[in-house]
Image (cartoon, rainbow, N blue to C red; front, side, top):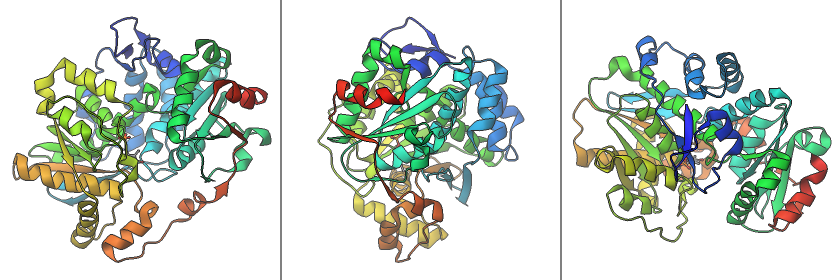
Length: 436
Ligand SMILES: *Cc1c(COP(=O)(O)O)cnc(C)c1O
């Protein structure tokens, strides 16, 4: 598969180049130039196919053009020791559990594949620096995936506040490859410093820098695997429309689903589930996108006012606006409705869901009431976070105290960065120069 910038038709780059450079020179984002075709795979796969078998089969065609098939199958083998689980609630609704990974969030899926792929790319003897703006949860996911990967170091830029969940034995001064640095500032300052660094071509070439945030197609595209997995699990029992309901923050997850569709997965619609931060909803209905000020809600991973993947969404809509309006259905869910959905799913099915999955569940109820998809339609709710990560809210919604698994307790342990700096490129370079 080859990639181009959202701003220009040329030049085309391979998956490998897109992942290693992360951003095109013209300030766009990388998108596939031509769709891959995954249809052939569906014929031979069914509910007995494991996630790892699916990834091993599909990864070579995703990576084609930059990676030989042997390397692609190495990547597939080393990426995942965890797998999604499709839980059928009833004939019309399933949960796709995507929180089975090492840090309890669906982001583990994109990051794990990217880290395995970067290690494979660096087998030519080069070294790469992966630079990423980190929130406490995403930082942990990235540190976990990149830890011990050969040829790559991971620099995490954290905003002010307590760091948690990192294991100092993986830090660079202890012989590891993880470099947590704290910025005097906010998450936006971290993001700005990442962008400034990536756009400084001299700097990126000197240190061979790329990013593990979702602007990197190397992290975004592996997310199509779990949509395909849900589809092959369901395909023999489907007799009506198939809908995915996706909780949306930076819209990477929804875009991965749209690509799964573009690459040949039969699907009838996507629900873009948002909390009060729902400005993109207007855009999906054909109006201009006007970002509104950020609102803090009880589904914090969806608290985004300007999504990083905006340009990628626009590239979909520019191609076929009328088709897209019949494919993506936006819904906005309040904090009260989120809690009510958590309660309802527990009472009806005996299952705990986190607030992000609850937004997707409540949004699906709203939209299917309006759209009339028919008695045989099936909706897959993407459960993106482990419910125990939001134990307080689960308790508030269901009245039940839930057990916190040991691995999540580890993620709450306090830790310290290796440096504290102002958000400026020269300060950043002095902090990392001794690490490389
Ligand atoms: C990051 C995150 C989301 C939002 O995903 P996007 O790809 O940014 O839209 C949803 N749920 C959870 C639990 C998350 O951590």
